[in-house]
Length: 502
Image 1: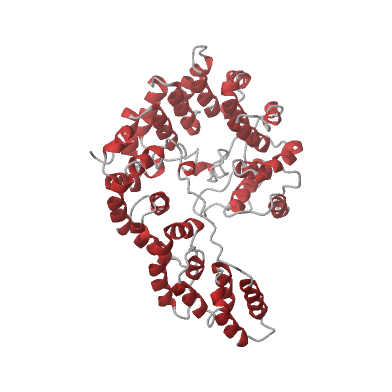
Image 2 (image 1 turned 135 degrees about the vertical axis):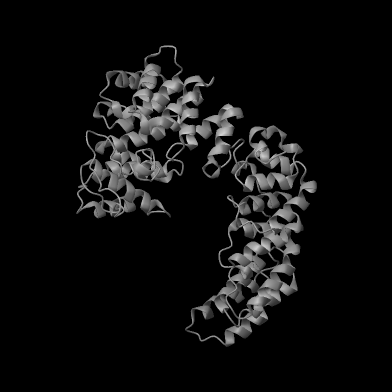
């Protein structure tokens, strides 16, 4: 079976050799979901040779790096055969071993001792990263581990003392007393070792707490599409011919915010008009948001909105695509009609946010506490893009909710009270940082994009991200529409011309 065929028939995964499954996932032809994992773990003993073989090979050129997934799978299997793979991960960055890798070594217990001791010897008097720590938490009583840890007292007494404290063996006391005699009393390590000696002297036995069981299933979805952003256009078009409804919907969405060929456009338009499932048709119309002003596309979408027999899913996609043509009474009325139905309310709120029309300002605040997470998410965006300053403080409650934090940060930056002039925008950035409890990785860039968009929606030039010198100058927003050089209203973090306007 060709690797690409696995996309179209995921129910046959159980009959495919594990090595082929791994190849397909690494090439972007399979998503790692419960079906994929069951195909491997339901025959775990049979799977080990293929897993070990794949893990031992060089995969730097693969579109998808499966190291994290392999680690999770090996943790479920718990086989010492995984140790060479674990050691490769350690050697890549001994100082940054994640908790998952540490727990994988701990799970194997005494089998992990020899390879880790061999690696520790290679460091001699150098910084050994997290290797001593891993040895200390292995939950095995091994005199060789004790000797290796006490030996490091001569090179890094503070770190070695910490590891010996975790290891918890009173037999370390003589070596600690010897090290203490060599350390000046005013050295912080002196007091640390003193306290450790007292602590170990009072311990009756080594404390070996059991390892928490690892649940791989909570980390992965039951069903997931391939990482479509790396799949070629030809393969994605093939998926549109024979894929499931879910896959076809995801594939159509993957064309949004990208440049695609005339062939792809024609195929998406054909699906928009003729696909038997309204979810696919709606996704097709929404994907055409960037060309919604083209006469053929606009007429077709307006016809959908006017058709009383059209499905809500299809109307919702068309309404989002046409949202910036809000002066058209048919579009305005369709959005309000979609809002009235709970099944299509999230799409209506999304269209309201994209319209920038203050006539919709009363709607998003009603749903910031909605039980439906998607309705709640679109209400958050509505507060931002409709500049509902009075509602911005309510967004702060979402900063502690990982599911909505990014949405709330972007929307808060768009709507937070304060002077949004170019001279004061950095102060507003600092305010968002403080109110959110401090930016996490990549969040500062996200908020800067939102603040630049806030400036441009007010007709001012951006501050944080200037245009490329060889491209056209930034144009201010006119009549509520997004200019090509503004950050895109879909929240992707890209400029409009490289996102929905690509």
